[in-house]
Image: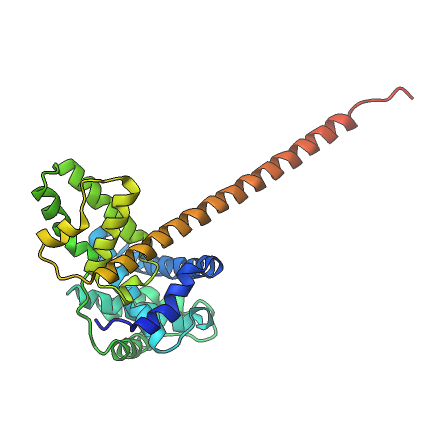
Amino acid sequence: MTYLTKEDWEQNFVQKICDDKSFSDNLQEKKKIFSDFTFLIQKIFKNNLPKKIIQRIIFSSLIYFYKYALTNNIYFLNLSLTEKLSLYSACIFLSFKTINKLVDIEKLSSSFQNLFNKDKKIKYEIEDIKELITKKEFEILFSIQFQINIDWPYDYFNLIKNYLSQIGIGNDSIKTVINFVNIKINEIILFPLYLYFTPIEILISTLNVIKEENKFNYININDFIKINSLDIDKDNLGECSLLINRIIKQKKCLEENNNININKLKIIKDNKEKEVINFNALSSIETNM
C-alpha cells in the first residue's frame, strides 16, 4: 500500500485531530461511516462471520474508502445515497478479496437492492447494482494504484507475545496487554492513521500508549523493537504515539462532556416534573373564601 506524503497527511488529518472543534465534527462523520460499513457487512452475513474476519474487513474497507475519497477529493456528506452505497459495497467487495475470501457479487447486489431503491427515484435491478459495484471497484483500484497487499496491526500481536514471554511475563498478563492493544486499535480505527503510518508502527505506538496509560512498567519499547529485530523509524513512532494519545484523550473528553450534558438535561427534566407536581399539589388546595 502506498502511504500519504507528509504534506498530505498534515493537511488532511493532523490538523483535524489536533483541533477540538474539527475533531468533534470529524469524529461524528467517521462514526457514521464506520457504523454504515458494520451494518452492511452484518446485513450480508447476518452475524455469521468471526470477529477477526470482521475486524480485517472493516479495517481494509476504511483504507480503501479514505484513500479513494482523498485521491478524488470527495467529501462524504455531499455523496448521494446511491454513490455512498456503491462506494461502500465496492470497498467491502474488495476487502474480501484482500483476505482471500470471494464474495458472490450477485449475493452482494441482492442484499443491498432494497437499500439502493430506498429513495424510490430510480429502480435498480440486481444487474444495475452489479455494474455500479464493479465500476466503483475499478475506480478504487485505480486510486490505490492496484495495491491490495494490506496487512493489519492485528497480525503482529504475536510480536507482543514473543517479547513479553522472553522477559518472563505470564500468559494471563500477556492476554491482558494484547486485549488492551486490540481495544485501542479498534478505537483509533476511525481515524486513518494507517494512511501514513505502517501497521507495525501503529501497533508499537499503541503498545507505548497503553504502557503509559496502564502503568505497565515492565514494557520497554526499545527492547520490544530489539527482541523482534524490527527496523523502525523512531520519529514516526513518536509522532504516531502522540496522535493516538491525543485521539484517545479527546474522545474521552467528548464522552465526558456528553455525559455531563445528558445529566444536565436529566436534572432539568426532573426539576420540571417536580414543578408540575408542586403546581398540581398547590392547585388542589381549597381556599376558605
